[in-house]
Length: 583
Image (tube, rainbow, N blue to C red; front, side, top):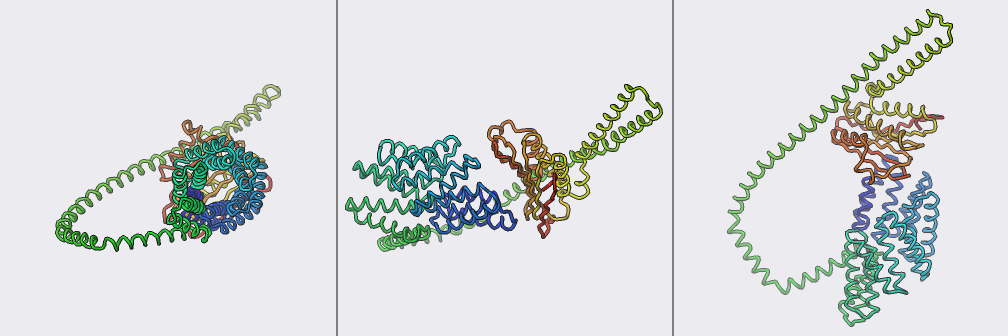
């Protein structure tokens, strides 16, 4: 589901229709899993995708639904996103007073959390709204505030938009500074899907060129704005650039060109900036051009077609025979290469599985030896010391204290051996399976530290057992992730989710601790994280780590599940505790 939401976000600017499709799929999945935070994020993503496609009523509806859900689940980040999206939707429709109301509410919420990442894109939107009402001082203040946040947080996407807004502000008072801002925005936008900012910057340069009576440059910049809007499917930009080109050509006396762009602008406006109508107008124009071209070149095409048919008839037999022979030979070679590759993969996987099975058997052997061997010896030694204490009837306090300390140390050794043997050989994992073993692990952790809030949720995991090796590897990985939280995270909450679908089993371990900088630790990743990745890779799965300073950590483990291990039902297994345990 998170992957679908990320795909939707990645396509929002360059292909809003594809983003909408991904967003709907993620929304459906979230509702099936009854995962309300995921449902809220999917609604927010759909709202932004509808905004980019020009469907403002649906965008407002999506953001309102997301805000209502965020209030219900106390998701403050969702409230910020929803208010920012609602403000932007009203801003695009020209309702600047209502847009500012939403923007300021989003700003206050982001500052209360506090969260600079959520706050970063909002001041630029406030500045743009003030610009539309000609309040230049307020527009400059808020846009510069947003621009400084963008640079500090390395938010290039928002930085490009704020640069274009600063260009629009300076264009009314300082054309030289405006040109610099526009050019900087365009340069930063290379390779980025930010068609709205490119359109704004190119149109700003076109207006400045026109004010300097540089008609050729004005047309060039306006066409670049139109091209950027079309490539990014930014419908409002298509309308504005087309209308501006029509105005330029009208003043130049070029009526056909002016009429062409005016038609495009009106068609876009009449369909509420709809992509479908614009594409329809373009298709009709192209069809008309083709019809005139066919009338002018009809005889030439007929002659070319005749020559092509003769050539095809002459060479058909040769090509057919040669093609069949080539395909047969190529197919044989391809089949052999595929077989070799499959065999290599099978052997590599067989070797990796054997290594994991050997490690797990060795763990079980050592655990059993500790429990049955060392543990029994320590217990027998304790009994002998107790018998010695009874026989000697010690009266010397010093001797009695020494014997008591020896018994206490022996008791601690027995507990430590028992703990190590249980970790190496968890009884719940062997007897009942993965879910009961994880549940028991979390209950023990919560019992040790009553301040730690622990939650566990299970979706779609069948009552039957998975493959023993899969269960063992996943349990070790979960155990490692939880131990890392206890050692380093300083967290007060741990949330574990197990979600099984027809294709795979996903485990998420999330905490609200101090987190860490993933970029700074890529080259020096801990041995535990490297082992986790390699073990999951042996099973054809993967381990991902999502963390940032002061925002907690999410560990995601995914392994494929064989078709015969699936069940037809889904189960949710919350574990409640009154004071400490798994919530």
